[in-house]
Image (cartoon, rainbow, N blue to C red; front, side):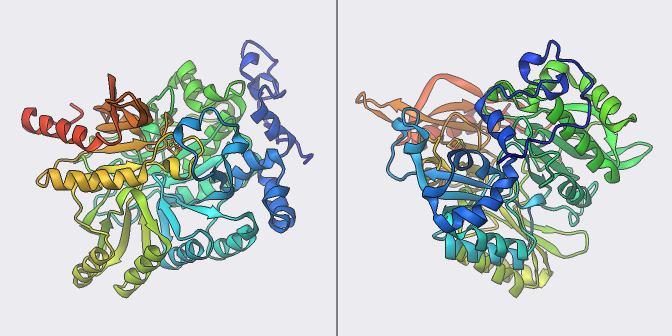
Length: 553
Ligand code: SF4
């Protein structure tokens, strides 16, 4: 436990100055200013893997060091999950060890959302053998297991890594999964395929101890789709496909997006980057964040706070002067997407004449048995590739025209329709109280119930609508940018009892006119009254909207 975190190669020449109070390494300030920074300095999070394999997997949960348990385990995708039976009212009052179960949540990173059927089958088998069948598709294209025992981790890693999958830096203050367009390389309307850039970014930064002690998590998105399909507006860094009038297809660079508390949309740097230089620029931005990012307060440590203080012009200047050592070309902004749905659900032609089929698990909830059947079904209809989306949906690629109908019928038989209702298509939910230690309310089951209720109550509703459900004030399900965002909390019902419910945010949107939903003052609904409330809002929208008007307008 003695390796100190790798310090930046540049720019150590600065003297501690007015930014010293923020704990910036670039200001020469390496003394940890909070317990999280101390844990990272004491030992690199990546080093916990060795202890898991040589000690904890043999001696069991009780042998795990406290700093590793609630800190470094994340560097390998592991979080302790919530002990069953603890209600949301106790979340804020219990000590972490009282909330901890001896089982773990494990996140598998799926960079670009790209999987082969062989990889999907391995994910399914691990779910069935080690995770009590759990396997959720997250809104960052990952797969998330629950009920994982520390004893099983060496075997789980062996199986994942044998097929090229990893849990490295799936959580923690690290470069998290690099999300990508689910139709990269196949879409007829693609501006540019970002897959080579995703692969090169992964090769350079994931598991690299030069970047394994960042001030906070660091989220990356790359998409060359005109649908702007990776929620680039709310990532720490994003590369969005554009066509430069002289230089051709490349990427527009965005920095500083993020939700949770103090949500901010990313800012354009106004720079155009060719495909082969995306990894350079990304590495420069990660390095800049490592060196200049604020480390004093966890609540101010995301890159969005640095971008807010500096502005995009200064950010670009420092990036070019100190990290890239050259100027980037100026470039255009992305164009308005052709339509509101960004999820690729349905049947669509690929540029090679075959088809991809996007289908909708309810709120991302699948299971090992279903995933294995999806792999079987894809292969039976000539496909060996699947993708996950940032809307908790899935795609099967490379389907010959004559195989589309039998494939969609097979998916429907699994309860996975390629022609879902607007509600099923547009509803997302975070993990919630079932497994998350920060949760106050249940989300997944409630989201599935809400979809069914709305389908029954509003059968003809076919407008694009997004309903995002969070189990606490964090924003894992992106509530601030949903048409209807529901933030889990305890509310008082008509009888004066404290019950599970939601603070309502209305009118959020992503796209070129992004907006954060307005918190409807005083409007809190009980979980029981949720379907009644959403039905009322949607009926009022249908009655009052002008032609072509979207919910967020
Ligand atoms: Fe947990 Fe809250 Fe995130 Fe939901 S939003 S997964 S409850 S931290």
